[in-house]
Structure formats: C-alpha cells, structure tokens
Length: 168
Image (cartoon, rainbow, N blue to C red; front, top):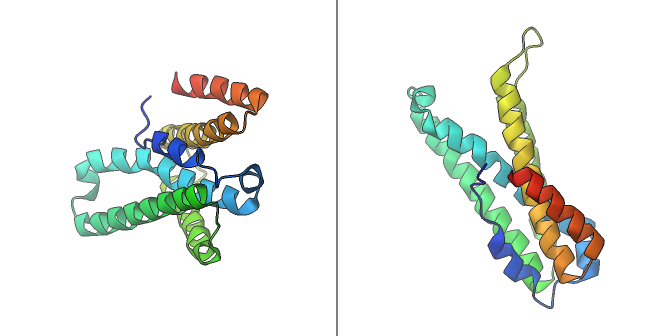
C-alpha cells in the first residue's frame, strides 16, 4: 500500500535544536501532530473519490470547493507542525484552526462512513481500513523520527516494527 503524503521532509524539521523532548511530550505538540495526521489520512479517501468522477458529475463544483478546503487545511496544518518543530514555539493563535480542523475531519468521516444500521456496507469497511492504516502510518512515522532524534531506542524499535507491518 502506498501512502500519498510524504512525511520524510518532517524529519529535517525534527532534527533542529529547537525541538526538545519537553516539546515532544507537550499536549500542544500532540494536537498539532494529530491534526496533520488526521487530514493526511483523509487523502487516500479523497484520491479514491476523485478517481471516480461519476460520483460527482452533478455536484462537480461542490467537490472542487471541498478539495480546495481540504488541501488548504492539510497544507496549513503541515506548515503549523513544521513551524513548531523548526522554531520550538507553539503559537496559541493556531489552536482555533487546529481544533476546528480536527472537528471538521471527524465530521467528514462521520458523513463518509455513514451507517444506517440495517445492512453491512463493505465499502465503509474498506474506506475505514484505508483511513486507519494511513493514520497509524503517519503517526508512527513522525514518532519514529522523534524517537531517533532523542535516542529513545526501545520505542523507536517498536515503531519501526509497526511501520514495517503497516507498509506491508
């Protein structure tokens, strides 16, 4: 399984001196990382829906507006995460965007994975599998970069094993 978002560039930001172990353990960093990972994980779903043009033939303009909003949120959340890693400073004014984007992603998932409770929707099972696999991949990748930087050997080994399983 390929993952559409490349997170290897985040490694360069993690390796700067301003990113400390205290920052890694902070709730603020965790929220920013989770926001980016949630939005990045939606990319598999977005790409699959975008490949199937007949789904949106009548509502193409709504789909284009959605894509613009999704990519704006994804890119901005990546920039926020990179800024935290590079500068070691957590901007409080980004918190509203982070909270709103996390809520937006959760609501979007609820709509996509809508379950009427009457029958099994196999496509929902497949889509949720894509999503959770991607989510764990992005989280574990970023965590592994951090653990390598701070020489946290045991967690690093565990994350690398998990990443190998996810990639296979």
